[in-house]
Image (tube, rainbow over all chains, first blue to last red):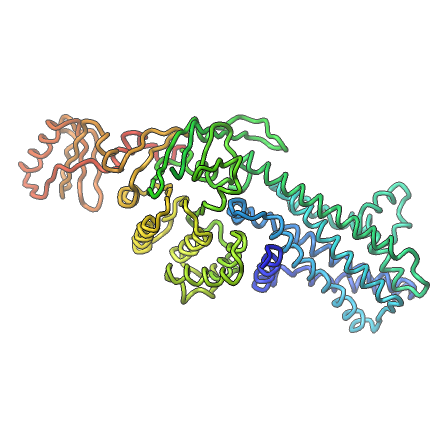
Length: 255
Length: 312
């Protein structure tokens, strides 16, 4: 079995016995109720797609910051990181596998959102271009894996990583256009949004749900995948640099 | 030679940031050590002596600041990948385990990090679990295990890659006497298989029982390397007397120190004459169980390092 798949399998073994790690799924209903209540109360059926997309992508991001990004920090706490550093094979693949396993579960909020929308509000949004929608979702999961690897490696640099993770929630939701389309943000902020892959994901998925033909599907998907690939490469480089630094400074454990 | 360490220095800097610039702390200070193949070698020293730092450098977890360290002829910096294939490291206590994995899953995970194909990993995990008496608990979560059982999982994990050099970092921490005895038996078996073993420990009895040679380390430097018996002979002119008594002998000229353990008084004296004076005193007071005894490893340790207790 490849090291990547070993990482995936191990993470599923761990998650199966730690259902509390899936706490993000418990926050989704609150976001769904909030978003859909606003839209329904305002009688704005044109915004239903936004109300469904926000909890879906917030859930995906929540899995990244709440679980995937903390994989390495957890390894550091349990001293399994230093044992891994003494193992013959590269840690990169096994940790990438573990992060990927978490992010595959990041698709669950999509189903949860749709189900809650139907059960609580009797609303199911139309998806006029399902292939585009699913392609955008798949690309987003891929990009989120890369982003999580970067964040996970970066979290090893700090002993107070949770503080940084808290910052990576609401500001990102706004900047990425998950809650409000990017074009409604102040102009100076918009270029910043374009380097966050979620802004491309949110726009493309929103367009995929609307009736008009979706323009530029190829290059927009490429943008998501490209940003994800860049993050994967960056994550690998940062992880190697971080582990090298830990070996040099003796900062492998918290002890 | 399995381990060759020459003039090894490791310093740490306090502070924060990518490159901390705070005060420098020396963990290893020009340490030199050779461990021949197939030897069980003990590293003894107080907390902060540098034992764990040495183990981490030998297992490539840490980089040395200066000097060199070789494992089976491979440099730990230049040939780190080669070193990792031949070294197994075993911690003591709770650290280094996934409580939410079973013992079998733990071994299969670590097998994958040791380039062992999954089919072979399953077999190897089963063999190791059987060897360490964990077959019945193989599919239980590690977090439900007793301290001794967790230590056996540690051992199995350290052996999964079939290492030629095994580093034990305080392996019997928290073990009950039976588990500790089994551990010592295992050490003998591992040596019989041709492996080299380096153990850090505070347990002098353990070191005396299982080690071919021991090295005393303090403040990152080697104080002495010898067989436990040879090291005990380094205790100079001091002589020891043991007796089953509660009498106070501290007023006798030449008595350096006394200690009572399990009802047995142990008296350290300056020389033969003082030891004889203690023997005569005890016999005169009707004590019948009296012996002049050879020094123990612990006596030499205390002589060379002192009674620093918790001080580091």
